[in-house]
Every structure is written in structure tokens, then in C-alpha cells.
Length: 356
Image (tube, one colour):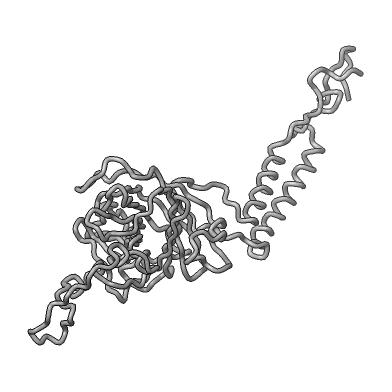
């Protein structure tokens, strides 16, 4: 008998088979720690490293382990002094953690190295990371109900720590100032008592620095405050190479200070924003390039086979049941796996005789 046209066994992949393939692909991605989706451009993922955290090496190859996020910048147009255009269109950021500390690398293209503020007309390159300490915190220096923790790196502080810059470097051979005599007998005053900035404890008047990053707090406009010397817990490292700045800021994940942001792998993602100052353009204070809020999230750790045994057990059961259903369906053509070559049972051929 001649098979009727169109009544041939189906060779299309069944829905069940596609489902099984999808499950297997998801298992492979999960085992190897490959995220199915990622919020590129809105989230900076913190990668885990089992090696030494490169807190003092901005160009260390270990930074290649972290996914780079490109962050768009705009001019600061909220409060005076304002700037219309960003000095740099974007910066690039990476983050690493080793279970105890976190290090964030910022890099941007800057053809000029500005690390001296000796002259009145000189301004320094700088960068900052600000963390929201509450929900709905204003990006404009926070507010009473939601403060900020700010890490502010300064190129002139980095130069001072490295022994570069200063009055002596800018004006070699200059005479030493004659110190004003102290005649009031105050034991707290030294021969440099007339240096009011130092006597007031202004960190910018210090002659030595322990870090190139200043740990700050803010709860609104005009409230930016340096944390006490004993609470300055952010370490900085930087290098300007070939027209590129690379700056590393690092700290314990949880410093124990209530004024600091606490970063926890098991907790919610942190909310962060970034800012950069270009000294060659005269940037300072509010004259800066800024980003919007982003998320700082810990990248998921790869799951081992031993960690996945409940899921694998359920997967084996599901595959077994699916196999039994498919085997049963293969014996029941009416289920949808296609008719036999002679068509459905009872179909009549051209001779008018019903097929068995």
C-alpha cells in the first residue's frame, strides 16, 4: 500500500527534549559559576580572589580576574559651584575581595598628571567613591535620614606619601620661615603655633599623611566631615602611567565603625556613586564629573557538585520520569510522535480498503 501524503512520522524535536536540553545547560552554567544574566552598566560585581589582594598594585594582573564596568560621567549641575561638561566621559571600575578586605580599582584616561597644590592656581587630580548608608539616600551629599560614607583619593596626598612635591620641590633654595615666638606660656603650643590649620586639626594642613584616601561622612549639603584620625580606615594606592590613572581604594569589608558602610556578601547590594576631579581643568569642590547611583554586588560563587547534591538528586528523578514518559509516548502514536507509514488506524487507501 502507498503511504498517504503528509502522514509520515514526525522528526521535529519534541517539547520535552527541548526542556531537558535547557535543564542541562542551566546545570552546566551553575556548576561553572557562569551567570545567566548580568546588569551590565548598572552593577559593579565584586569578584572573589584566592590570591593576595593587590591593594598596592594598580597594574597587577590579578585585576583581570574582575569584570570591568564602564561608568558614564556627567557634569555636576545640582549646586554651586557647577560644571557643565564632564572632564572625562567615563571611568572604568573593578572590584576584588578575599573574604576579609575589599579593593576597588578606578581607572580613567588623563593626559596630565596634576599632583601639586603649592601654587594658588594649581589643583590636584582626585577621585571619590560614595556609599549610601540608608534606603532612598540622596545622591547630593545625602540627608539626615540617610547619610553617606565617602572615600576621597587625592593625588597630592599620594605624592606627599611618595616624597614628591611640596614647597621645597617647587621652590628649591627658598629661605626657611622664622617661627613666631610663643610668649603666652601655653604648653599645648609649639614653636609652630602660628600654623592655625595644624593647630585646629585640619587634615589638609598636615605635614605627613598615612593614606592618600580620606574617609568622610556627610548627611546633606555643607555637612562633609572628615572622620577622626583613629577612624581613617581606607588605604590608597595609585599610579599614573602612559596618560592613564589607576587608583586602588581598599578597606576591611566591615570596619566596625557605624559611620562606615558595611559590605557583606550575604547582605544586600551596596549603593554607590563615583566622582572624578581634573586638576588641569581647575576642578575642585563641586567642580567635578559625577555618575548616577549604581549597585555594588558580590559575584555568585561557583557551586561544586557536592554542594548541589539535592538539586542533582531531583534532576535525576526528573530525567528518569521524563524518560519513562517519552518511552511510553513512543508506543502511543496518537500522543503526538507521528503516525505509522500507513497513516492512522482505520484510514482507507486508494483502493477503498481500510488499513489495519
